[in-house]
Amino acid sequence: MSHAATHPHRVFDPLLRLLHWVIALSIVSLIATSQLADWFEHGPYEKTLWNLHILIGYTLTAGLLTRLLWSLAGPASARWRDLWHPAVWKDSVRNLRLPKTHRAGHDPIASLGYLFAYGVMALMVVTGLGLAASEFQTGPLAGWLGDVAWLEDVLGEPHEFGFGLMLGFIGLHLAALVFHQWRGERVAQSMVTGKQYLGAGNEVQHD
Image 1 (cartoon, one colour):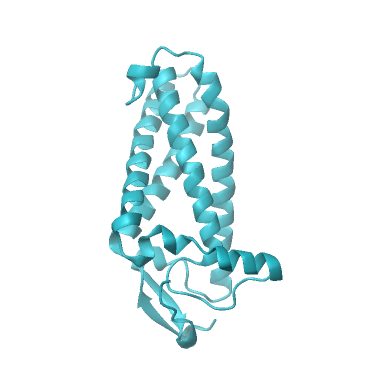
Image 2 (image 1 turned 60 degrees about the horizontal axis):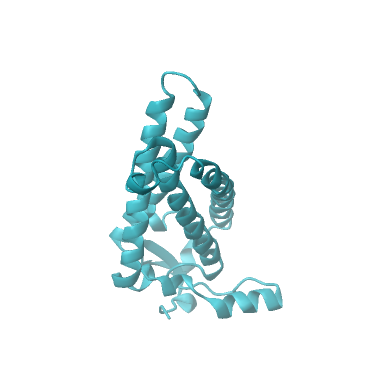
C-alpha cells in the first residue's frame, strides 16, 4: 500500500496507547529482571532483582486490570469486540488467505495473537502472585499462601511455560511489524500517534 494512497485517521485513544506501553514495558522489564536474577543466583543482587521483578509484576497486573475495564467503557477501538472477528478467522482458514481489505481498529488476524497474549499474561499474573506469596511471602496472597511451600513447585512450571509463550509472541509481533513496514504500511506508529493510514476504499467503520 503506497503512502500516497492512504490518509491518516485517528483511531486509538490516548489511554489505550498508554496502557499498551505500560504493559509492553512491564513485560520487557519482567523478562530482564528474571534473567538477571538467575544470572546473579546466590549473589548479593538476587533478592533485590526478584523484589523488583515482583513490583513490576504488580504494574503489569494493574495495567491488565485497567485494560479490562477500558475494554468495557472505552471507545470502539478499545473494546474487546474490536478484537473478536470469528467470521474473518473462519473465512481465512477456509480459503487459506488473509483479508484483502483493511479496517479501522485492530487487524482481525493480528487480534488472534493479541487475545492469545492477554491469556498468557493472565496466566503469568496468577502464577506470579502465587509464587510471590509462597516463595517470597509477599503480595496480596501472602496471607493465604505464604506457608504453602509446595505451591512453588506447582506454579513454577506453568509460569516458566508462559514465559516461553510470551517470548514467542514478542518475536512474532516484532516480525509482523517489520513485515508491514517492508510493505510500506504504517503500522508501527499507530500505538504512538493513535493514527492509522487507510485507503479511501478501506475506511471501514467499527462493527
